[in-house]
View 1 (cartoon, rainbow, N blue to C red):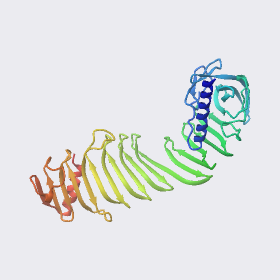
View 2: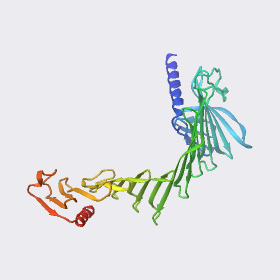
View 3: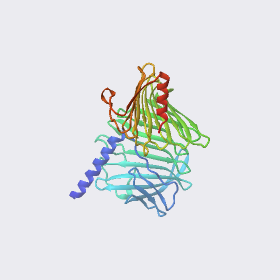
Amino acid sequence: MKKTLIFMFSVMAFLFISCQNASNSITQEPETPAEDTSTETGTNDGGLPITIGDDGTVIIGARSLVSLGEGTEEIDSVSYTVKKYADVYVESPYFYTYYKLYYLNNKLRRVYSYHHGFQCDMDYTYTEFVEHLCGYGREDEKEPIHEIYTYFENGKKESYYYDFYEDGKLYGEERKYDLNGHEIGSKYYDKDGVPRETKKEYDSNGNLISEKYYVNNVLENEYSYEYEYYTNGSRKTYKRYENGILKSETEYYESGKQKISRYYQNGYLQNEWEYYENGSQKSSKNYNHNILCYESLYYQGTSPGLQGQTKANIQYNNNTGILTSFTSYYSSGYLKSIYWASNGILYTFEDEKYLTQPSNFEGPGITQTTLTEEQGLAKLEELRNSN
């Protein structure tokens, strides 16, 4: 008896916490079977596998559902075959989920589930479970948690709905999908009971092109997306806008690998990152209202995500974008050159001689050259193109 009570209270605590978190999170919908066959499989709201046999036996995970019979029910003038089940966790008082599976032309089109908890004052046998007005909430709340899944005729999800009440406020979530499985809308209620909604649109290639966010049915933010493609069909560019203002853009190699990524703030270019085709970083740039002010170059790394040795750090005037200085390095990490545009002096260093700037630029393996502004820029370009 003691073990039973410990198990009971553990389950009740788990589900109560789940309800509390539901208002701030997205519930994972089950992948439910498309047809009424002996091999129907999917997952329930806990992510456990569902199996339905020819004899009507339903198993979720390691637990068998109790069959409550079969009947018909009409929704929007459409008559469905309805199969009912109960999933019982503990007894006396009962703690269970009640399922209704709706079939049309032998294809599963809807799943309703009602989650009932320890506040129910019931004395039912297994075959008497029904949609009962009681739930997980506080003592003065007797509403069950509802979940509804609907499916297109091709078996793909059409919508998902979930709700419950707490302190007299409605909490829940709703999602809608198109025939290709893309989510085209979602809606949930926050902790204050205010509805928050998202609407999405896709192009013929399945790319997201528009997102609109509503709070209390008023448009708050709108995002749009643009795409360009190479002749081989791979993506060439991607741009993201917020309320009509460019926020970010990405360029790709023809192979599909990311080439350049840019981030904008208040319509101005803020940062830019360039990558080698193997995925390692090639350069990073910082901008001040579209004016380049600092840049770092890197040797090619050995794999994606791994940055190679720094090739050069380059400083520009914050207001004009004119080159002021650069420091370059060998692939070994040793100092290669230092240049100041103010006096045109370029110091070059032999490899494996200096890891840091030598005092007064004196020592073996150091060469000093004076360059014009054009020669300094040409030296920088040569540095960019070096391996």
